[in-house]
Length: 413
Image (tube, rainbow, N blue to C red; front, top):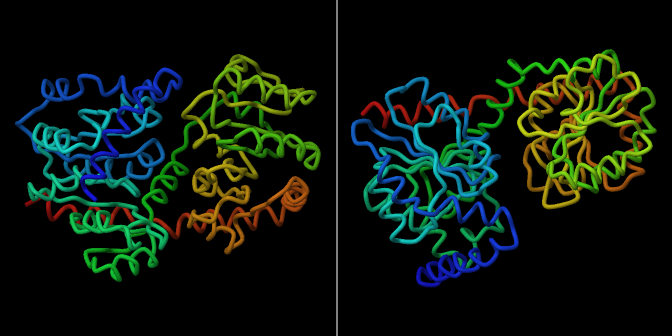
């Protein structure tokens, strides 16, 4: 199985080389790894002990960020190295101030894993949620470097618990400790013979709660919203936007903010065309304006605002539910906004919990969406659902403190 795994990694490298000529993301994926080991060797340091954080992409970075920032605050002398697998994480966070070095993760070959870990020399390694790379895990294990999985989540369908998952189960045995999100994940690990596990919850709760307590201020957005009720749609895809556009008539007098998941020019133009004849305006073109009386929809055409823009809303809509899966519901819930999303939410624990408790609402077609927004147009219903959503986030806090308490035993040794 290991031979096959290593073969697949090498074949993927060749396939990615071809795909770069047709896909900008793949081009960034490969260009970011050119001469990477030489760069790491030049920048390697030996005077300070290192903590290595690895994130698949931007979402996992935000998930692990509370642990990173708490660790850096308490142990400022440690050198922080971050790696990303995906360009969508690296390109947006390559200048993150609290990291000493930020790199793409070299492809998971035996040679790369051995050389990377030799150069970085981590005292501990921290991976977030889903990332499992056999050769890196094996090299850390061989060198007796503690490896921690934080905000991990497991389900029965994963290879770890299947008849063909021997290689994956070997990886489980290389992890020093698992901090999992729920009791189901803990039970699956224990049934597989893994006892070094704690139910810590999800560190995202800490992150979104802190953000809601100290959100960024956007005066232009405040002027646009003024005294109106506002529905904020985050990380939307075209099907989400079509449904929202048709449902807007069900909220007369409301204003709408849409933050598309993709902000390429052709995507923004398509959204503007869809919204016509409703009056819409891009955020980048709204600077300096003081009157938005005739503007019904504000389109957020940049990255980085959404998590704080929710402060201006009354209802939230989270995109992705008609595709691979919904995006971050907790950012909106932390501000006390009822959360609406499409039908593909079942693999997200927080979405299921929000529905169960009454702070989240799923729909499958446009008629159901119109019914939901009409229901939430009632102030008493909306405020009750928002209160439930905010309380759910507060109840979920604490994972970061538990993880840091455990890591402190290693970092102070």
